Amino acid sequence: MTEQDRWKNRRKMAWITLLSGVAFPLLILSTESEVLGQIALPFYGFVMGVVMTYIGAATYEDTKGVASVQPKDNRYSNRVKPSNWNSQRMDSKRMEAERKD
Image (cartoon, rainbow, N blue to C red; front, top):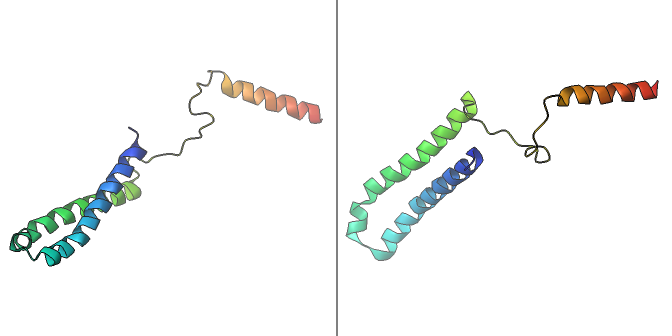
């Protein structure tokens, strides 16, 4: 699992938690259950904790640059570059420059 996949899963968890927090009062109103009203405070404490943890971790990573995900260039990500790759590249540039002259 890559860092990008982890953040995608964290975002899903935060959105589902946030949506359940919005839907919970509708559930209480539609059922008129007193038990649901009694567990509202712990439920919203949990929702607040999940969403704040996600927002805090995302903000910390953005400001401190911790484990930032760099976009991959898919054309070269699976290839192993030879040790003399850079010198070969410079030689080819030099040869192109000589051809132009």
